[in-house]
Length: 471
Image (cartoon, rainbow, N blue to C red; front, side, top):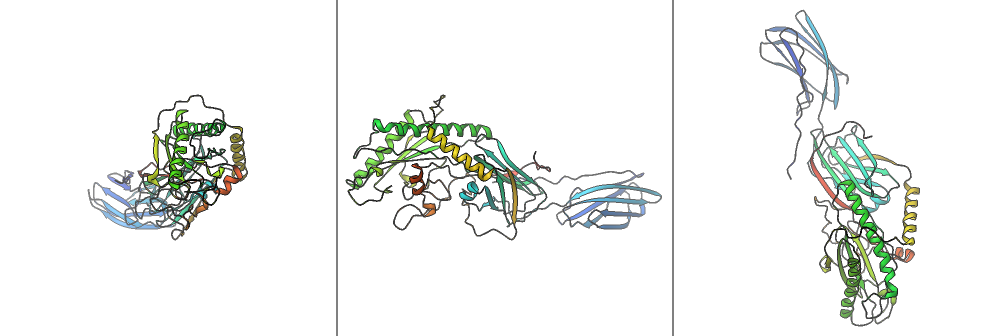
């Protein structure tokens, strides 16, 4: 990727003393030297120049200026920003003035931040950590809620974070967070923006039970799918509104997995479970869901209730719904990447009037909001710098570290017995991608959760630096 740099402007001030001029640079050169340059139309000897800085520095020189030939006085500037007073005495004339010089701070490699946080830290502790490959002199945090409103922000210009150091930014909001943007830049004008979308949508639902050996949705079970559909389309509508508010283009993908009990042939059960998943997928599509829809079958794998062979267990004849912005990590109760079949592409929104949300979901959302209010009631943000390099946390655990924001390509991991990955006991879930609730959570809530994985989008380049805190 091509990198853009902002050339340092040359600031000049001319003060006339007969045929005499002087000028200065607004920033130091690449060796950290500030300078003043004097010119004259005629020979001037014994010109006394005194320069005093508010950092306690003092430079005094007596020089001879030849006609039309600039005479430069240089000195080493140690501080990042210094204000100077200059006195010039030439023959019987005297002049004075004031100027400021910035010492640009830059260094390291113009590469993306390295994300150190996992999803739990970002969502549950409202903190995000990075290691920076380049020296940062200005840092900005922006946090948006699911309405696209800016709910927390911080602009920091009085700290320097050296290349190789880690830093963390924290915020506190009781709103549901949709997007986090962290932008760091140096004094050359180079900047990098990391954007994360940690939006997690829980879709509580009552499990749809199928008759043994059948894939059709029974009439007395349809209300369960209808309730889940209501939640789905409301959340899709919320995503559309959030995208508009933040000028985003995230699109949702629905993944449905079917399961069976252990009665019958394992190969036949796999086909049966896929048929059950497809039946639910078709229901969502035919009733107006406008996201991409995928389905797959796991058969006897990933039992909700562990049983022996040939056991007729109603709770194992079920389906799992996963809503995300990327394919979920495969493993355990979730199919591998190549095992999904697509039922439908994304399409334009068909439902302008959405069905009513189930009362149970409204209560669930209210309880979640109350919990956030209790935990994060005070709004604010903070910065912490860990000098001397990064911690030993895993790389990119909170999302992709690639420019496209895709999922880490590494193996999500599996338990030794072929069950779900060990991370948080989440079937198919890893801290690097999509996840679903644990079996304990499902038992407590009677639900399966659909989770948007943390998405990473990065921008490298030039941006105009603001020098005051955002209102």
